[in-house]
Length: 145
Image (tube, rainbow, N blue to C red; front, side, top):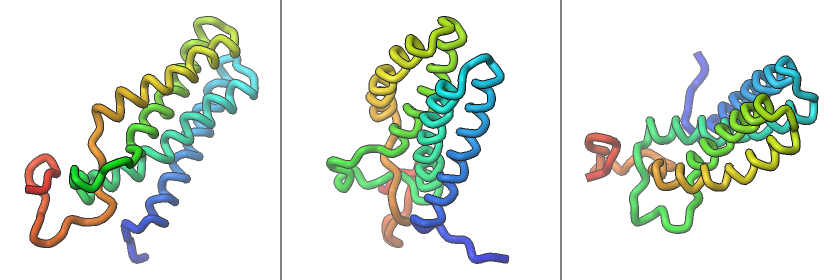
C-alpha cells in the first residue's frame, strides 16, 4: 500500500484530477446540449477550475478543521473561490439552454461569479492548513477551544 499524506502536493493533485474530471463531464454535457466547443470550454474550464480549488479545501476542512480566526487575516478563502466557480459553470450552461446565445450566457454568468464569491466567502469558514496543535484539539464542529 502506498503511503498516504495530506501534504500540499497530494491535495493539489487530487484537486487537479477532480477538476479535469469536472471539465470533461461538463464540457461533454454542454456539447451534447447543443453548445459549441467554445461554450463547452468556458463551462468546463470555469467549473473545472472551481472544483480544483474546492476539493482540497473540503479535505483540509474535514481533516484539519477550521483555521484559527486570528491567523486568517487577508487570505482568500479557496472554498469560496471553488464553490463560486464551480456553480458559475452550471449557471452559464443553464442560461445558455434558456437563451440559446453563448454571449448572453457568458455575459450574465461570469459577473455572477463575483456575487457568488461574496456569498460563499461569508458562508464558508477558512480551513486550517495543518493539523491542530496537540494541546488544542478541535472540539465540536471543528472549532478549536
